[in-house]
Structure formats: structure tokens, C-alpha cells
Length: 224
Image 1 (cartoon, rainbow, N blue to C red):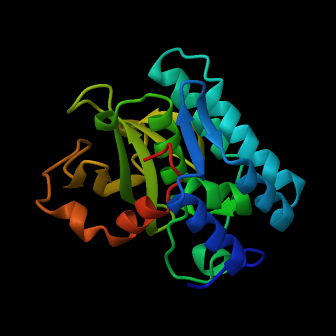
Image 2 (cartoon, rainbow, N blue to C red):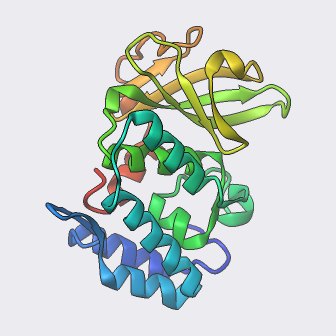
């Protein structure tokens, strides 16, 4: 597996080891906690600001003030949209790599998939129901390219809200005619897009999502 600039194999192996040992993060009664060894290794590889990003993420989850789902969407969207966008081929030296939130924050950059995935797992950790969240592939019409966003449904079949790294505000899907949905997925399955809803479920679609399954295996404990 190719490594991005500044992200060498030992840290990748450390992340895997921490995951296998259940020490990447733990979910206790006191809340989500990153393993101190992981934070220390990230600081050694990337410096103080990389460690601060991880600890700020931990604080975002542990010290969640509650409120409505919309409040949580706003906080999480703002937190991650401050991170730099960098294409996978530049950042990871791969055509398409799905980073875990730890990898995304440690390296301080990522592409649209990384933003959507990090927001999804953070909102799940904050208690937002899985059935309300979809990671959605779209076509960005103005850019004429594939793109990924996170969508939130208040109830099944409702018009979703769109969390996008390209746009600071969270808008209803009808306010984003520049995005054409293709398909969406979450931890429960994969659906073909139809209008602005979840669309038709794809039988066995989850099994086809090899990158998603690989991502789940690399997640730190406490997020999956």
C-alpha cells in the first residue's frame, strides 16, 4: 500500500496494531478516548498540530453538549471543513483511498470521501441514528466530476440535508441542484439513487463495497 508524503509504513502498521489490540480508541462511560500511544506516535510523525487535531476531535465527541441533531450536524461539519482538500493521487499516491478519521486528521488533508466518512462516524459517535445518515456519491455538475457528500434524513423518505466539504453551509438537497445523486450507503446497506431519497436498495450491495469493508477493518475501537 502506497504511503502519502510524510505518512510512512511504521505509522500505518501502528494504527493497525492498535486496532487489533483494541487500543486505537475506547468507548467507556466517560466517553470516546483515543489511546495515548496513538496520539504520541502521531505527534512524533506529524508534529504538535497533528496531535492537537486528534485531541480536538476527541474533545468534540467526549464533551458533546447535546442539543438537536441539527446542532450536531453544524458542529461536525464546521470542524472537518477546516481541513485541507488534497486529491488521493497526491496525498496517498493512490487513485482512490478511503482514509479513517484518524488517518484524515493525522495527515491534515484528504479528499471528498475522507470528509464524508469522518463526518459520518463522528455523528454516529455523537448518537445520531445510522438510518438518518447516508454517505452519498454524486456528480458535481459544475465541476463535471464524481464527488461524495454526507446526507442526513430527519425521517425515512424525507428530503435530506447535505453536508459538503465544498460548501460551508448545510443545505436541503433541493437547494443543491449542482449535485446529482448516484448511489448512497451506510452501515446497513447500499442504495441506487432515486430522486432525492435513499432510492432502491441493492441486494448484497454492502458486500460489493470493498473499500468500505477495508475501512471498517481499519477503524479504531469505539467507532464501529
